[in-house]
Image (cartoon, rainbow, N blue to C red; front, top):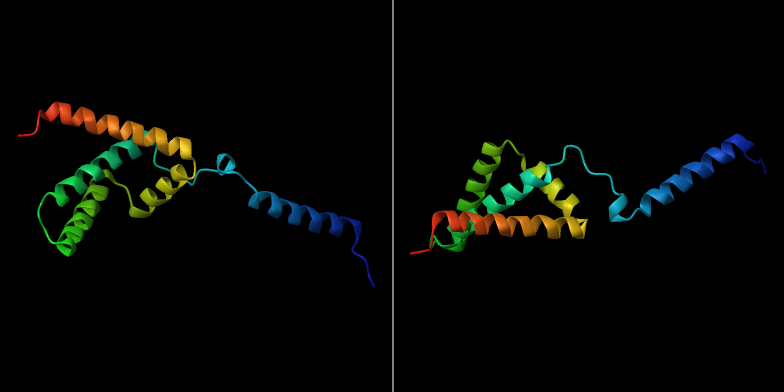
Length: 124
């Protein structure tokens, strides 16, 4: 049986160890995807998406029509913001894998929506 050259053995071991270490990363160690929406931009976009969702829900449409309207309006919102669906999804997934980050983001979304509600006045 032929043994590996010591340098080849070290190379194989280092590749295996680096693979194992990469698989054991905690969410705090995960590198952010590039590109990534900044937190402030994600907060604003999420606030707009929740507002859109509320508008569609109160439109009194059947579920299929409501879903189609929401998706159409979501696409238009992403286009105006110059954000792709995949950029939004990967950014959301990244922040969601960091529980504290997503909690902070949604705290800011709630504050943003509350401020918007104050600006438009009480509901009639």
